[in-house]
Image (cartoon, rainbow, N blue to C red; front, side, top):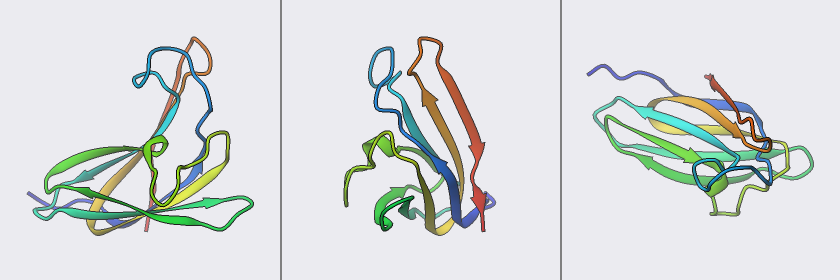
Length: 123
């Protein structure tokens, strides 16, 4: 199969609400990086989080197996430290092989949930 994607992606907008409506984990407010690896090699992923009023944090590390997808919830990133809720952030996602990244947010603060999805910026 052809390898699609780029090795560097940017999500300039991030925010995890501190509360939501509905059962967890399905309807917990969250941000997700959906990463597709169409190559024949596993992808080693590093994520750096940027903030308004403090130094960047990272790298957060993940692996996406060859010809697989992985949905990484920012709420679940813990090492080197949890991504704080109710805080504006942005991120850079780097991979050692080309991947495709899509950004998704579920905001369940109201009973009428809102879902946002967009392709990240690639370089």
